[in-house]
Structures are given as structure tokens and as C-alpha cells.
Length: 163
Ligand SMILES: CC(C)(COP(=O)(O)OP(=O)(O)OC[C@H]1O[C@@H](n2cnc3c(N)ncnc32)[C@H](O)[C@@H]1OP(=O)(O)O)[C@@H](O)C(=O)NCCC(=O)NCCS
Image 1: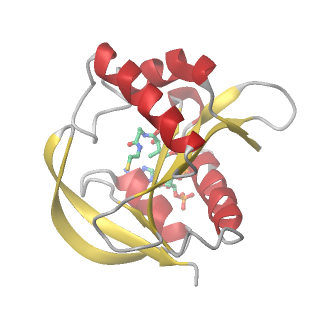
Image 2 (image 1 turned 180 degrees about the horizontal axis):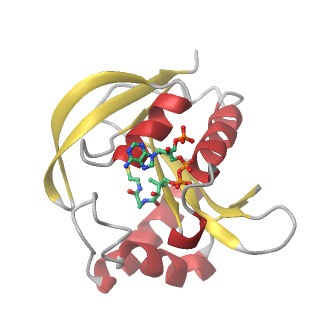
């Protein structure tokens, strides 16, 4: 697989993922389309400012998009700290794609001195996502109430130290 940087042209892909009830089952449910379009634009700004790296996960042998993955700086956990998130389209799930993409983005992040800690916050109900965090060597620092666009979600705090 290849990680291809997200651009303005991927706004419809973001809508396809984040307005879908199945994809958003463990992330607070589908988001309003206008919110997702605004979020996509904010993410492009963060990418431009060097505060986020976001990619499409694309098949090695063709241009088929399998999903998306990204890391972005968070300011509430101390310096050099990032959050990671992942989506795999339903027809490509269960084939190890998210885990492989996560390993790739972590190995890229290792060569960026700005990135020391990478967290992932899957809901406690999101078995596949928690399995990925465990598989790629993150450590579970425990449950907490995560307040975000979806309200309060009970999440695990997985972390990997790249130092
Ligand atoms: C979470 C998601 C990215 C997983 O993608 P994927 O490519 O199917 O994941 P992988 O195939 O790499 O790995 C899934 C792992 O979870 C495990 N898994 C899947 N469902 C599971 C379940 N119900 N219980 C326990 N483990 C489960 C699989 O067995 C696999 O581990 P294995 O390879 O050791 O068998 C995908 O389901 C998705 O996009 N979900 C919607 C968006 C989302 O929730 N994103 C995460 C937000 S934190």
C-alpha cells in the first residue's frame, strides 16, 4: 500500500467516511455534512502549517483508495504529542490494512523530531480499533471520558513513545 497526502480534492471522500452511520458507529454517529466539509478545510490548514500529516491509504498496484490515516498535533497532553486516527472502507476491512497503514505512518513519524508521543483514542466499544492499537505496539494507559465533536465518549488512551 501507499500513503498519499490528502488534498482539497479529497473533501468528498471525507464526507463519504464521516457522514456514514456504519463508519461512525463508534465515533458518535454520522456528522452533519457541513461540519465535515468545514473540518476537511481546517485539516488542510493544519497540514499546511505542519501540524498534521494526513493520507489516503491507496492500493500498491492501482489507484484504489482503501481508507485514510492521519496524525495531528494535540495541545492538551504536553509538547511533541500527536493523535492518530484511521478509517478503512467497509469492503476492505478485516484484511490488516489499518494495522499496516498505522505501522507505516508511525515509521514516518519516527524520522520527524517534532513527534515524540502518538496517542489513539478508540471508544471502549470499538474492538477492531483497540485491536489495531495493541497490535502496533501502543500501550493502553486506561479509560477516560473523551469530550469532542461527538459529545462525551468513553475511550481508551493508547500511546506509543517514539523517543
Ligand atoms: C477500525 C478500522 C479502521 C479497522 O480497519 P481494518 O483494516 O479492518 O483493521 P485490521 O484488519 O488492520 O485489523 C483489525 C483487527 O481487529 C480485530 N478485530 C476486528 N473486529 C474485532 C472484534 N469485534 N473483536 C476483536 N477484534 C476484532 C481483527 O481480528 C484484527 O486483528 P488481527 O489482524 O489480529 O486478526 C475499520 O473497522 C474502520 O474504519 N472502522 C470505522 C472507523 C473507525 O472506527 N475508526 C477508528 C476510530 S478510533
